[in-house]
Image: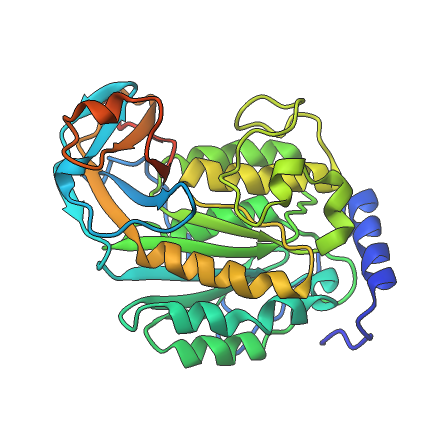
Length: 356
């Protein structure tokens, strides 16, 4: 049954406040289009258990925000725990991408869905014709609504046919995203998740750490877009109000990669920032309907301008931090050691090495 109440800021606020206070109550199955079966579970494996490469999808921007194309392999350097590693795989920005759109379909999101769906065409128009798109919805669990296809109009049709849950159901954000990672997982070329969500999860905060561990074992890049606009403004760190954010640690309470004792939108905002930081994406916190169009166009531009790099993994079963450096010339040039880098670089923060 589709929720039929009129769009109302007060009703939306009330629904979200009830959700935050009550944990969203009993589970209500989410509805989707005809293809509403849950994706089959895929056993998660640490990165490197099924591949001999650690793959990084890297965006390089000038200081003023323009994406940099035409870079050569020799201009990149990858540091694994601070130690330079040979780049054994390199794909230029022309490589096609797989783009999975993941949308929360809770009752509160129904009330504001026009904000993000009306501008979705901008994302699809700006993608390369060879890029594949897919759609997954979630509330209590994820549903694959549209499988991977190069037919962008099929995604528009699926978006226009979305159905939403009625009443207050369990909202399992962390576990749903973990299932998406398992199912979408590894693949050839560039892979990204465009995540439209309030970031609210009614499950215990303990479900966050397994998701972080899983993301550290995949090469998906996540672009979270926070839904709820000004309703979440008071909980949003000042730096996160920018339309572009790498997800830097802007609040004082939790340690890195942790949600600490945060609750409500403060917890949700930090989670979305961390999802971007861990995977090398950017988190967005739109404040009005007009913000969605430039956000979608920026994400499409980021996907068009990603380089794919590969290094050999370590074999100690530990988490390894990664740093990507880029020089205007060859990576061995002195400028790459300069603290005043000519570029802003977005890439995943690390990986879990396979065991011996």
